[in-house]
Length: 103
Image (cartoon, rainbow, N blue to C red):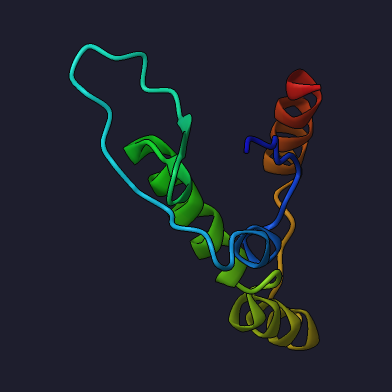
């Protein structure tokens, strides 16, 4: 049995694979590094590349990070309240131009 899974979160992927065996093997040297699927008599197997595992780990690490650096926000808030926060207009302009160049 073969099926194509797209746009699944890690939690959804785990739930979809309950009861199935998952084999994680490194690609052979000289291979294209792509993931492959094989059907076996004992059940479906999925082979993940080392790159796919690292990408999954990186995705999890990033999602575990807070969206806002509370310490930095508090530091800036105190500086504004104390009247010592200064805006560097050139730096702001440079960053806006960098952002615009990316678009």
